[in-house]
Length: 198
Ligand SMILES: Cc1cc2nc3c(=O)[nH]c(=O)nc-3n(C[C@H](O)[C@H](O)[C@H](O)COP(=O)(O)O)c2cc1C
Image (cartoon, rainbow, N blue to C red; front, side, top):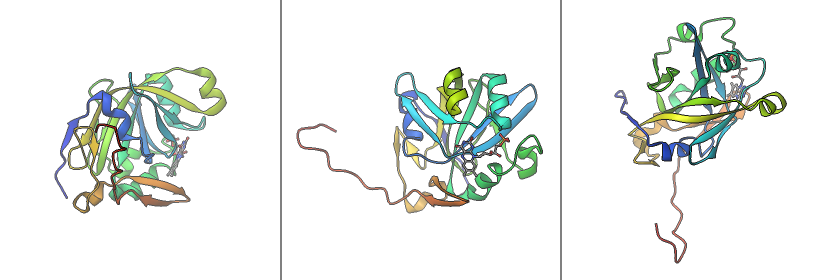
């Protein structure tokens, strides 16, 4: 697969992009500095407005850039980016420019200018930081309102995921620990419960 087919995702569907718990890349940029790290711990917390939570450790450079800029990007990497995902989660941007070091091709999100990646990725969300000092201090948990989102239409279209053999490179990563991942796949559909409409 070579072509990228990113399309905007309606904000009402943004929660679905991380509903299944993929490992994400968290990005931030401020005053000419930018950074990227891996995060296994993120989740949606609200449909409308779409809000998400992600754990960002106090030691990270990413956290410094989020609090300085007021925003962050959440990128959903595909299986083909497993090594990159692990690498950006294993070194700090304080020590090296991870974008240059790994040759990461990033654009700027349309709402906040946060770094977004499309090549090899299933989706991205751009989030405005919602300051919640107590959660940040006590649990390293950051909240964000999704203000823009997009996905590769080959795997997420009209609000629905479609994991198939043809888009295997874009199947999402799920961290087991210590660099081991499982890749999402084998999508199955539950029967509509009797009396309910689709
Ligand atoms: C697969 C994976 C998942 C990770 N998940 C998280 C996470 O959810 N929260 C977190 O604070 N750090 C997590 N980390 C660690 C950070 O990515 C790591 O500390 C990173 O080097 C921080 O980079 P920075 O200092 O450039 O921001 C994870 C690392 C890996 C490899």
